[in-house]
Structures are given as structure tokens and as C-alpha cells.
Image (tube, rainbow, N blue to C red; front, side):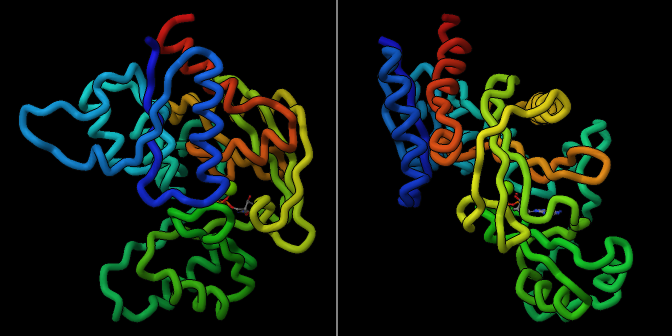
Length: 291
Ligand SMILES: Nc1ncnc2c1ncn2[C@@H]1O[C@H](COP(=O)(O)OP(=O)(O)O)[C@@H](O)[C@H]1O
Ligand SMILES: [Mg+2]
């Protein structure tokens, strides 16, 4: 019997989050692979001479970002899609930038905010002034672990930069050049097994962030050769079996905004009519069983 496990987070309860394991499970089962969906708390422990609970599965669809759970499963010998290492690099927008740097893959100019360990530390005005001078205003500030557009801010001047900084000081975050030619629009491209599978253009009328969750509108798109090649090299560079790459339209071509190792299937499937979860299941089945 072919069987796999799908790992989701212990706290996952939103509709679009729960749609992920649901869609993947039904696509696997339609192809004769039995699936058990498990929350990550079963794996969060190390006991001597004891196998992890999922050892009987042939693979793990890793829909969680919990690096401990992922690494424990990998250590127990399970092949994870995506690998916990690749997920961890993507989970943090700054480590994604660092991983892509120097590879010929364009990213907007980005600086990591110094990590702060003291809540009472005063904001470093000298540093913030230098950020404004380097990047110019408006500039973008992002929480390193944000998603769905929620942790992305635009600072129009030094005062608003100080305000955002006050809010984010204790969280890892970064400062980035605002790609004004892309304000309110971007491309979301799904890459499966190293090959572009589906894409959409996202446009927002009233926000520089084009996320669907913030009211952006999506339309299906067949990416041009340059966009496709860029997204495929991103997936290869980061070792991702599956990802959603966000591309911005810079003056001189595409630039990589961020990479989502756990990109939702829902919006993309609805907008493009493509079976993203099915293609991912098929890819995993090919990798694991060679058929
Ligand atoms: N440097 C930037 N310049 C212009 N727009 C940006 C920039 N960074 C992000 N955006 C916009 O904000 C959206 C959300 O940013 P992103 O980095 O993808 O974070 P999230 O993980 O929250 O989706 C992007 O889809 C894009 O529309
Ligand atoms: Mg994004």
C-alpha cells in the first residue's frame, strides 16, 4: 500500500490553511496513495532508541514551517516535500535574500535590521537615517517572518520609518528599496519539480501590496520566458520541490520579491483553473515511487 503523511501545524485552523492538506490529500488518494494528515506535535520530542511515529509512511508532504518537526522527521529517515531546510530559508525573507545573493538572481536592494535583544533599547536614529539615505523614500519595511502582506509596510519619510521601527524593533525585519514601477502589481508563479506550472498577475487598486488576501485581484497568466527561467532558477537555487515565487516589475526587468515554500493552492487554482495540488501530488509520486 502506498502511503504518505501530510504534516500541518498544530495551530492551523483557517479555511485557506486547512484547504492545503485537504486538496493535497484528495489528489493523492485519487492516485491510489493513502494519506494521513498529522499535526506537528507528534514529532516534537526526542527519545532515545525510539523511532518517530511516521516511519511507516513513504514520504511526508510538509505543509508546516516548523523546523523542529521537519528536522525530526527527516532525521527519522522520511523524505519531506519541501525539505525543512528549504522551508526555513524561505520562511525568513532575509535569509531568502541572502541565499539568492550573488547567484545572478535579481532581488531589490535589501538590508537586515540589526537584531535587537532589549525591549528598552532606544531606536538607533543614526542607523535609520542611513537606511533612508541608501534606499530613498518611500522605502519598504518587512517583517522577516510575515505573510499574506500583513507584515509589509511602506515608510514615506523618516518619521514614518521611525514609527514602523518602533513597532518592529523586537522582531526580525528588513529594509528594502521600493520598486515603484511595480506598486500594486506583481506576478505569482508556481514552480513544481523545477518547472513553472501556473502563474497569475495580481493587481491591487488601493494598496502597494498586491496580495489576494488584502483585496488584490488575480488574472491567469502564461509567464514569458524570462520570468519562467528566473522562477525556475530560484526554485533550483533554494532546493524547493514546490514554491510560489513573487516577482516585481523593476524598470529593467523582473526582480524577486519573495519565495513562498508553502504557497496556497486555493487562489491559484480558482483563478487559473489549474490543478496545482494534483500536479504537486503527481510530482511527489514520481519522485517517491518512480511512476
Ligand atoms: N520592494 C517592494 N517594492 C514594491 N512592492 C513591494 C515590495 N515588496 C513587496 N511589495 C508588495 O507587497 C506584497 C507583499 O510583499 P511580500 O514580500 O510578498 O510579503 P508577503 O509574504 O506578506 O506576501 C508583494 O506581493 C508586492 O505587491
Ligand atoms: Mg508575497
